[in-house]
Image (cartoon, rainbow, N blue to C red; front, side, top):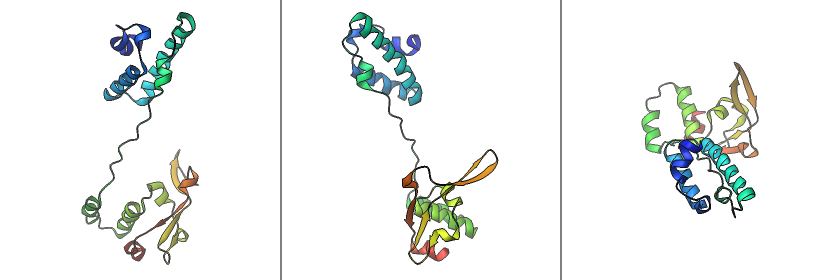
Length: 167
């Protein structure tokens, strides 16, 4: 790790010259090269341990890695469809059940597991809503229905009138 990823960047500098800004720049460059944030954080741990050693035995004043902090896990680009993109897609869906499912997913913002766990009692056609209280998952060739992972996963979602009519 040191020879391959750290020394090319910091090898010509004195330990006391390395700043938190330099560490942050190095982290950003590693991410741009395609390394996962978890791997960059693993390299951070090694680099931080080195600076802690220097603090303890060579009177270095501070650990720039600790000041800089870990790399934040970047959220994946989900790429939500626009209404126009969805409309171009949905006209190609000929099966009425699948058409309804895709409409619920798109307009309700549901996850696939939430959709698959729905039962008729979850829908309130008078209010135009659907209650999300469970999710479906397949694990080790077995089907499981369980509550959402977080309290915010339990929610009531409003559905457009056209979807309520489809239901």
